[in-house]
Amino acid sequence: MLTVTIRYFAALRESRGRDHETLEVAEGTTAKALYATLFPPGPLGALPVAYAINLTYVSGDTALSDGDELAFIPPVGGG
Image: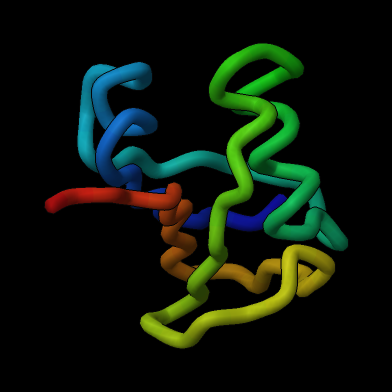
């Protein structure tokens, strides 16, 4: 098992009720797979999020490593 810290922003933060949490995940878990687990199909599960591991944008297919910080970054708008 790997220990990773997850950071949430905007609507994702509101949904989870926190801005971060630490989770244990199986080796080989990808950013996209973890997002799908935490946000199953529905309004938030359909968001086209960006993924960042340790402050670097990555593909959703990137596997997590022990100690990683993964950020889920949803689209934001403003005017």
